[in-house]
Length: 68
Image 1: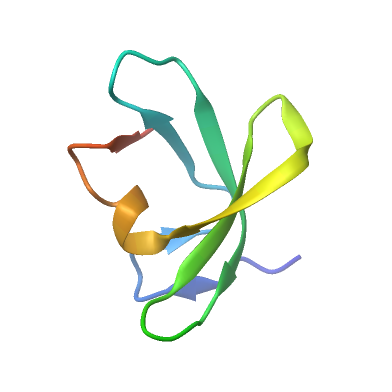
Image 2: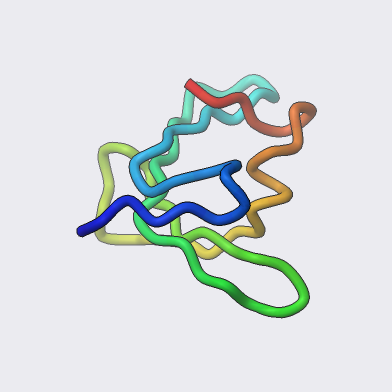
């Protein structure tokens, strides 16, 4: 699968950790151009069975997630 980028901010394969007292790591599986904002399909690093859809802006919010 090619590494698709949205606004050069996030790409498939990027990993993010929840900041608020959690060790959960999410990996970006796929990016979707949606309105009104782009979204990412992410999954818990050890659990690919249950992907979730999240706004790219939420992943990039430094108060909520940190890129690892």
